Length: 108
Image (tube, rainbow, N blue to C red; front, side, top):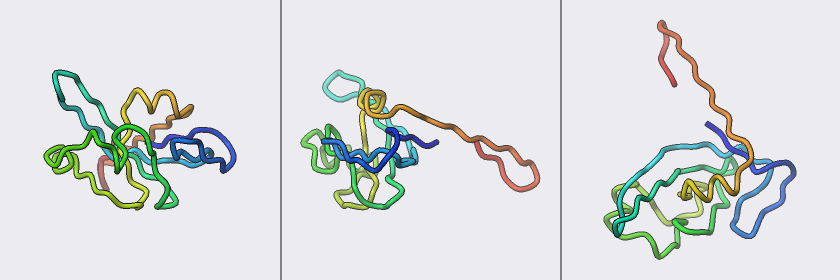
C-alpha cells in the first residue's frame, strides 16, 4: 500500500511531505485507557522526515510496553506511526497493489 498527500514537495506543519508515496508497513490495534487505538506504521520513501503529531516518535502517548509491542523506535529513519483518523485527514490517495503468482509467491 502507498499513500500520498498530493503533488509537489511541500512539508506540512505535522511533517508530511506532499508528493511522496509513503509505504504502509503495518497496522496496529490495541486498547489504551478503555479506548481503541488504531495506528498505521508508515515509511517516507526518502528514509527521513516523519509525522510529528500524536503517536510520533517523541509523542508522550507511548509507553515502554507499547513501543515494544509495536516495534517503535525513536530515530529519524523515515518510519513513523500515525492514528488512522489522522491518516484519513492528512492523505488524499491510497493505492493497493495485490499480486498472486502460484509459482513464485503470494502477496496480497
